[in-house]
Image 1 (tube, rainbow, N blue to C red):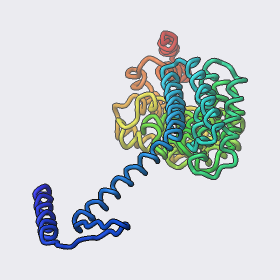
Image 2: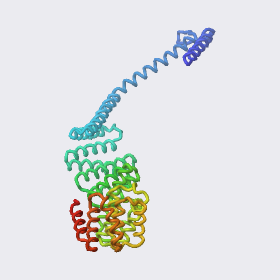
Image 3: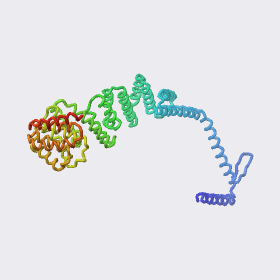
Length: 425
C-alpha cells in the first residue's frame, strides 16, 4: 500500500513538472560584454540544481577526507575497549570455571588496558564500575589461591574506587565488596573479623539474605548463640530456608541457648526470650524443663513449661512422636517428688482415657507410688512392666515392683522382679 502511494505521488510530481516545464517560455539573458547569452529558464534551473548537488557532494567528500584521522583514532579506541571488555569476560568465565590463576591474570589485564585507555584522554566509559569489578575478580582469584596479601590489596583498591562516589550502582558495588570480604574472612576461620565486616554494611544491606547467612555462620562459629538465633529467625522470615529446615535450625539454636544456662534464673531469662511459637515446640519445652530440674530449679515451673506438651499428648496421642512421648514421661518422673494433686488428676484422667497405653500406666503407677498408694501402684506397674518396650521405663517399673514386694515381705516376688530388671539392657 505504501509503495502504491509513493508511485502515485511520483506520477503526480512528474505530471506537475511536465506541465510547468512544457509551457514555460521564460528565458534568462546573461550579458557578458561583448557577448549576450540567452538561456531558457528550464536550463538555468537544471544548471542551478546540478551545481548545488555537485557542490554538496564535493563538501561531503572533503569532510570525509578530513575525518579519516579521527575515525582511525576512534577505531583504535574501540578495539582497545573491546579487548578490555573481552579480558573482563574472560576473567569471569575463568573464575566460574575454577581457573583462578587465569581469572586473576585476565582481571589484571583488564585493569592495565583500562589504564591505557584513560591515558589517551578519549575514553569516557564506566571506568569506576569496571575497575571495581576487575579488582573484585582478581581478589576472588587470589583468595582461592590462598594469596591473602594480593586479595587484601585488590579488595582495598575496590573499596577506594567507590569510597567517595554517590552513584547508587557504585554503592551497591561497595556493599558487594564488603560482603565478599566478610565471606573471605569467614573462610579464614575468623568469625569475629567477619562480624566486624558485616557491621560496616548499611542497615538495608545488612538485612539481605546473603549477609544474614554469613552472619549466621560467623555467629555460630564464634559461639554467639543468641545472635545466631536472632539471625536464624530473620532468615526464616525471609524464607531463606524451607519451613522444615528453618524450624530445625531455630530449634537447634534455641536448644543450645537453653543448655548454656548455668542457673535457674538464667534459664528463666532464656525461656522468656524465646518467641511464643518457639515455646510451643515440644522439643524446646521438654529440654527447658529437663534443664531446670537438673539445675535444681522449681519442679512446678518445669511442669508448667511441659503442660502444653502434655495436653497435646493427652488430647491427640498420635500427634506427638514416640521418642517425645517417652521423654515427657521420663522428665515428669524426675519431678515426681513434688507432684501436686492437679497433676495427679491429669495423669489419672489421661490413663483412664487411654487404658492400653503402657507409658501412661507406668506414669500413673509411679505417681501413686510417690503418693504412697501402694495397691494401685502395684496394679498399674505390673500391667506396665508387661507391655513396655525394653528400656529405662521397663527397668524402673521392675525395680519399683521389687521394692513394693520387699515392702510386703514377699522375698520370692522381689527376687523375680530384680532379676527381670537386671536382664533389661
